[in-house]
Image (cartoon, rainbow, N blue to C red; front, side, top):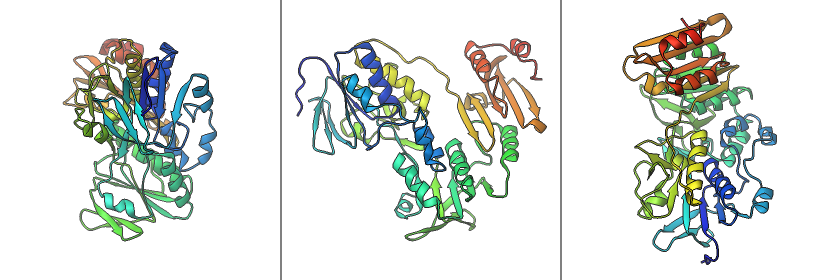
Length: 404
């Protein structure tokens, strides 16, 4: 076991958005903290939302913002970076974390930021050589390589990531079938009108949409040959990608006696039920909710890092937009799930079908409660600020006269 000597030692499990942000916040507040950042991938930490783009074009790794941390920064800031190491056990009484390498890491404070894993409703299908779910760069690399030799692909899931994956495959000349359980695309980001408008915008001969369809299994043995649907139909496919949500990687914490539900239960300070142990990002559950968004992970990582460094910080309420930039259009959607709960008292819209534009605002108790923009998102930040400020229906009409 590494001895804890001198200054405070903080171990961070997970080298993605939440973990890296926590490290940077700690180092910014205290140059003396001993920090160990542990990641289970062999790669330098990177911007995970680029993975669906990677399957179409691996050159995305050359973007200046692809990597979110460098070894040079870690060396300069005296952060110990341990990659390709998976933490397999925690002892919160002895304050140790044991890695797959056999190393034991003592800590004064621990931050668990080990993220989530794709949910696959038929897990045995993942043994087939052409069935994939994308979480890591290695996953994306395998999809990219395999897609070079296929003509037809099925993407199970018509949410943001599923559509981005479909778009990347289409750009490589693959015919794609998208299978979605809901009766419409992007059910959490758009209402019925917006979904229909978006669907018309992306309609093309190489893309086939199967909406309101439940899958019953993957056809094939060693190699998948199609996706079976309720009712008996089979969608032929040379490869299958699952994109139907994620599940928090909470088993490590649960095995150590830390309170978990769907995720690791935390308070506004990102504190868990164990002393000096914090959790943040996809793995954390706050007020019964886990939010799997990059910006949420960044913000929670910041709060966890500050508190682990001896500061006192609380998360508070924040609003995170959902953004899609594919199929030659853009979508910016905010708080649509809550806005569509029940019947909103008012809604106002701006549709310019010939320009590929559909915008809609939703109000509750005459206060802006949510909105989405398709095609033209130039007003997104002004509307986001208005929503945070609780602007009224009348003031919105005055500030944004295009809406009727």
